Length: 72
Length: 222
Length: 238
Image 1 (cartoon, chains in turn purple, red, brown):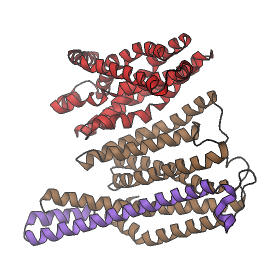
Image 2 (cartoon, rainbow over the protein chains, first blue to last red; image 1 turned 30 degrees about the vertical axis):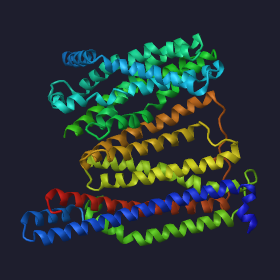
Image 3 (cartoon, rainbow over the protein chains, first blue to last red; image 1 turned 90 degrees about the horizontal axis):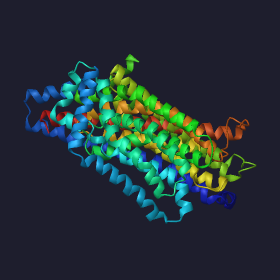
């Protein structure tokens, strides 16, 4: 185990390399997930608000439908 | 077509002369940037001489970038861009005209100033010719690639900092070959290969950039 | 191609597959880490530092691959007007930049014990550094406009221009390199790599690729949601 951690004396290079790689990948993943989550919440808020404020506004309904077709 | 080309060059030159401060500012910036190096690195002549090629070229690159974001800005803002798009001459030719005007007001002064700045950094006199030749062959590429960057960033927020970020990575070959020519001359080696590569870079830019910049202008105006 | 032209269907398929791709990625990386760190021998020349190769090389491969994808998506957007191409490009750029940074950092950490220097201006390192700047430029440009469509068009054009530049950079720095001592990089195309080293390398590469696909899907979803939000705001609903 000790040998494994010491990496033949190169521990100062090997572990930071793996650490940096892992940190970058996990960080990017976390940021991406957080961003998607935030957008979802924002959209839900917008759509919820839109429906309660102007329930019979044909323009708003049409806009939502239009965009359903091109990008869900 | 020649008439349209010359008209655009003439107009840009007249505008630049009227606002002489622009060309002067680029030149002053060049001198200041180069002067910062001995101040920062120390005046030891050997060290400066070794760096001189790189520093003079980097300063030139940065100074050439200064006025780029304004290359199409005025036309974009006052509607002149739409006129350029509608003009009978191909947009690529008009872009070339603007590049020529930019080179005359930025590249040429930088080219002329470079041996003096080399002198400031103890550049060997044998290298001066290679420096000026390199600048003559390489600065057109800076204006051409710069036009592409300026066209891409047209209408963007903070275009002033965005354009150098886009253009500098693309003109790295010019820097590399320009410095190689200077260092070859200082070492007594043949300067023809890097100079020819510089010429090749500028010719390639001449072939590709007007087309790319025109495409960027069209989608900017769209 | 046309089957994927429908954004709604594409995202449905992509997101249905997402848990599997994510699991596959984690599995491959875990296996790769095991084989790379535990079950493979140290190099007879480089000792334990050769293990850095198992993160460095896949990162570099992905850095190049993602840029190729970025250029292809940009072409798809500008030439064929594929409706998801610009979203894919914009989503991919930060991931590509991340891989490039990983390649540079792990490379420096590998270089210091091996060459005695953190950095050297040889063909490969310089062109990867330029690649990193190209990614940053793309990210900056696509986000610099008030109108996202304009940013997408500008970014697509930049990606294609940058792609033209990449072989030029590689070639020019090759030439420049003759004035300096060439660095001795561990070459994979030289001596055939032993399977005990090839296995973790390929596992990590596959793991990274699947990771990229997973994160790309998540980022594309976020961008599409943002597009929808913007459209709703402009329509006056919000």
